[in-house]
Length: 178
Image (tube, rainbow, N blue to C red; front, side, top):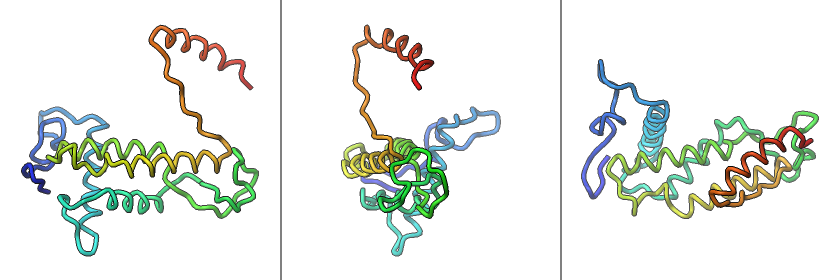
């Protein structure tokens, strides 16, 4: 894995991203997952015909990877023609496909984005930080929310003085909302 800025991979990195050494620090769950995700993505690129060097990886390769992962998803996403489309709790099974959940994809991209830069890639060329990836994730989020009948509503940003009051209000309201 080489970049214009030099060559580096997880086995050569800092102790937080390298394999645990006997007696050394055990990587956090996040670091372990990030390493597994990074290795999976790099293997995906190697399996392409022809193989794609990491230095030539673009946001299109990332999008293809995300679509490839859908076959391993566990989230039922109803298609618009399904009689259960828009129902939060369908009464019966259907043949709609299983997909990766938006939250899983969003977290995956965050880990891969960090791993890319830790492996020597520059933030300016990070394919995981591309606008196309953000658009794809937004579309997946909205599509999955509509399919479940739960429209996605963006959370409003509050000031620090309102945040503590808002937290108290929302906690007490949770018990009374049907």
